[in-house]
Length: 489
Ligand code: G6P
Image (cartoon, rainbow, N blue to C red):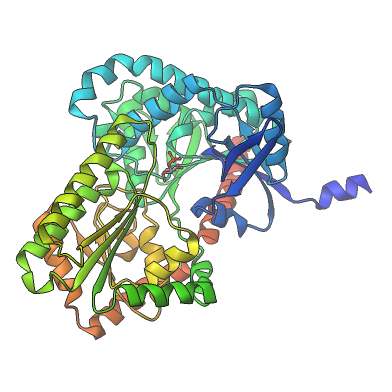
């Protein structure tokens, strides 16, 4: 009976990401309150029914004592989550340091901030060592929970060493790695002191995935130019070992957004918002408060638009939702003050006693409020300086079934490759171009809006997050079978 049970049980998928899809708040020594965050990855994997999914990652809190760790581990087990405990020091060097101060800006072509350049060069080695140590800690937890036949799916730039550590532990382990950010041109990657070690560590995976074909191409060129390995149509080959490299563009769970719009709660939000902003066109930005999102550039472009289009001044409002993120990293603190300063200046310049042109919120909105906001928006502004994909653009399109608003989208977001024909594409560094695109969007005739929206809506509703996850996992299974056949030949 037990044997039969085993035979029919589903294959296990161990999803390893820096952050678990729950935020944990300690209520007492042995009690924790857990809140599930329904991000893109969670909804993508919820739809993958043929696997039994376990999550492995950092819970985002410091739990130095054993009692607390045990209690949190038990609480998380109920949600199929397994924690990796990172102490304050390692979080500082690995997460704030190497991940968010070095890899993140570099992968988004932003480089290091001028005044930090030398300091970062000096602290580089200790942060890199911490990065490897942290990756080893993730690997130890995976190894402890791994069962023969499991698939291990590693996520993002935080865990580039994980494939290598896992394969060293067990070369038969099925390991995939997916990058959620851009992978930069090999000329940028070359500047990293640890360029070769990182590439080799990732190449230990069986399958390496990116959001776009361009990122995959950059990765393969980095491997050929920096490591001297061979790039093939399938991926990267070194001494007969092939690592498959491919593009898997992520999507959203569009039905979840479309269904939400029918809820009474959301309809009431919509009614309130329409009343609050009656007579005005609504422009919307929803971003993490991150330098890659180009929030200052967006706001300056809006200022230019107001400057040049005086007749629109009291007829349009920009709602900017800026969700605080990585608040311990100095660059992010500076960005917050910079954005506040610009918003204050523009509101002082163009506001009246009864109205301000920019409503800026430093916080996240709950899912229902966000859907309502997307639904009443006339023009969404996504001006990322670089962005792996940008799913806000997808969410906006999914909620625009009746309004058919316009999407202004940065050509440097991965989403530009899929929504480019429906959106107005802009270079976010060119404020004049963005300002005139705002004017074009606000004045766009209904039939053009409809046509552009239909194009994007079709894409968003047919390229869903669940398809993305299924495609990656089935490609990983196929890759392993092909590699076994190659070895036998
Ligand atoms: C990006 C990264 C994710 C990360 C998210 C939030 O989308 O690709 O891996 O989880 O930002 O950032 P945080 O540092 O708060 O986890």
